[in-house]
Structure formats: C-alpha cells, structure tokens
Length: 114
Length: 113
Image (tube, rainbow over the protein chains, first blue to last red):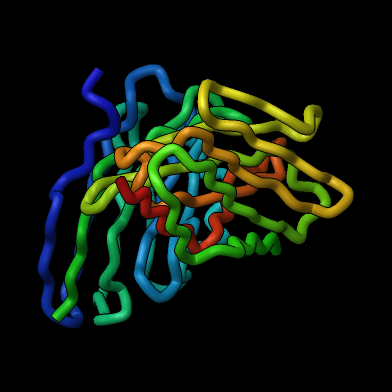
C-alpha cells in the first residue's frame, strides 16, 4: 500500500498560468477529499467526492478552481489563472467511507505562484 | 458553518510529563472528532478519533475526552516522549453526507528531554 499519491510534489507557476494537481487515492477507498494548508488560513476544506461523484464543493473558490474524479484511481484539482494568494500546500486525502472514517492524507503538492 | 478553535497554539512539556490540548466547536450537529499529527515538513498523520456516542476513548498513551454539552474535546498524552513533538490538529465533522473536516489552527507541542 503506497498510501495516497500526489503529483507533482512541487509546482511553481507564474501569475495567470494554469496549474493541475493530481491525486491517486488508496485503492478501495470510496471518498476523496481536497484541502489546502497555508500559514495564515491553516487547513481549509475545498471539495470531496464519494464513489467519484462530487458531494460537497463548498470550500472551492468558484471562479478559478475545479475538481474532477474521472475514475476511481485519480482525482485532479485545476486552478486557472493562478494568483499569488493561491500559493499553498494542497492536500489530498482518501478514506474507506466518507463519514466517521480515518482520512489518509497524501504528502501534498506545494504550489508557489510568482 | 462549523468553527473549531484550538486553544493552545504552543505547548511545552518535559519528557515524561502529560500534555493536554483543548478544542471547542460551534456546530451542535458535529459528531465525529479526529486528531491529526504533523511533523516538520510532513503531511498529516491520523492519531485518534472519537464519535459523539461516547465521551472517552483511549489508545495507549492517548486519551480523547468529549463534552458535548460544552462542545469541547481534548487530547491527553501521558508519558510524553521527544518523538511526540509535532503540531497537533483537532477537527470536527457533521457526519451523514457531510464528511468534510473543519480543522483547528494547530498546537505545536514540544517535548524537552
């Protein structure tokens, strides 16, 4: 079990460019979550999927952020027209069930927007 | 929406002493409360959790207490060791179709030998 895999581990983009972050959940886990972590805001929920269906995207900045889960083995978080305030560590987590189950976190993708 | 407040931003104890980290939450519908540990430069690692149908849960040196009336929960670590040094995050979740975690700001625990 390799755990949750996130790629790339580090990404640097220029202001206005697009960034796509990838997550491979643990095999057999039905729920996939995206969070981001910054020093100022702490850990913030973005969105989550259950059995590939979007369940809650209440934390997503609506205009530039989108997430998909085209199959059970990967999810993507896309940020269009990146801004310096998007700089953060983006964390993906998966769990066997969505509620009341341990969420296993990946190593994160550190996004730096210059 | 739910807000989780973690009262101690830093906590320093001597090796072998106990450490207590306290959190409060605002949403009375929250029913699942996990704790995570983050070591320097690493991601979050699950530590222990508690569900609202119990008020205490113990796992080795860790105990979680839940007071639903006060909307407060706490992590107790006994016989602390230097390897317990890390940032600890408490979190809350409503449950049902709403499994997202709302996190506290974290407590940096330093265990000095």
